[in-house]
Structure formats: structure tokens, C-alpha cells
Length: 115
Picture 1 (cartoon, one colour):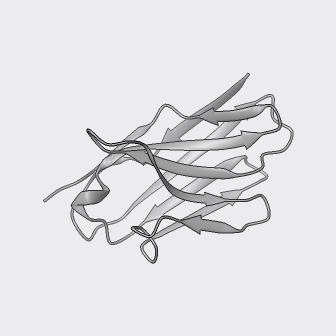
Picture 2 (cartoon, rainbow, N blue to C red):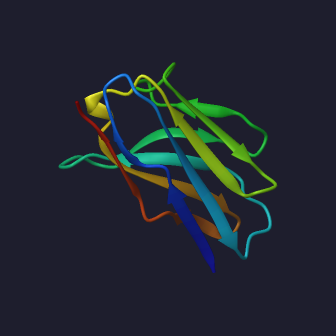
């Protein structure tokens, strides 16, 4: 059994910052890729950023230069630092991890960017 617990969402003003965290627990040996996805109302879930165990990162064009993904392998935790937030960043953000046993999702955390 694998559990993912997300935290750090909330309300931010345009231009502001938020930091999301996602901690994985349970039967985990090695986490391969970790990532963040988001889903805005009426839209499909989309990739935000991913990071491999070795630290290689990939970002959606819409967040490049504003968001930064990182991970702590010792803590099985992935982070998403979000800067220069825009109203269009408003969405439910989900963390995702890939294990040899499969892919797992967090429950989602709401991020709202509004003045």
C-alpha cells in the first residue's frame, strides 16, 4: 500500500508564491519519476513538472522559469516551488510517483490565484 500526502496549497495573489509538498509512505523501495500535474475546472489534467531519481527535470512550457520541482529521496518527498503565480495557474494540483509496482496519485490540493 502506498500513500501520498500533499500539502501547501491555498490562496495566493497574482505574482505571489506557494510551495507544494508531497510525501510518499508505505511499501516503497525505489521511487523513479516524481511529478506534479494539475487540473483546472472544465479542463483535462495536464503535466506541470517531473523529476527523475537522478534529478533530471521536465517542465510544461507554461511554467518554465516560474516553477521549480525538487525532491528529497531520503524523505520520499517531492516539492513544487511556484513563483510569479498567475490566475491561470488556478487548479487542483496532484502529485504522482512511479514505482516498479505502478503509478500512484495524491488526493490533490487546491491552488487559487486571485486578487
